[in-house]
Length: 137
Image (spheres, rainbow, N blue to C red):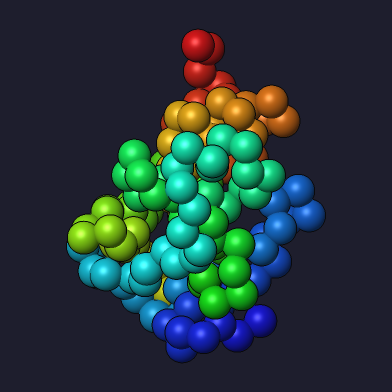
């Protein structure tokens, strides 16, 4: 499935995971990839929100990224990520944490709160040797 950005493609990953975002060109370490976009909702209401594409900007605002134009929502979790999110002036910008080869999936660490609430109960599927599901807490 082609994306709105010619550098990336949305592909099926695995039935248990769904779709993922893949690089069609090499990406350099530190390179800006894209912005995580969505609908702003008050952070205080985010805990009661049924969505899973929530990304907290600050104490006041959270983005609900479950929108058709948010390409970043296809970046799956990994305990060994190759991209990171940096909040800059109220925007959630995604950057390459290391060089990413053409054809590789973009992966981010969703963080402890999301991991503990949604991933740990069903088991992490990232396959990383550093997978937190393998580490006892």
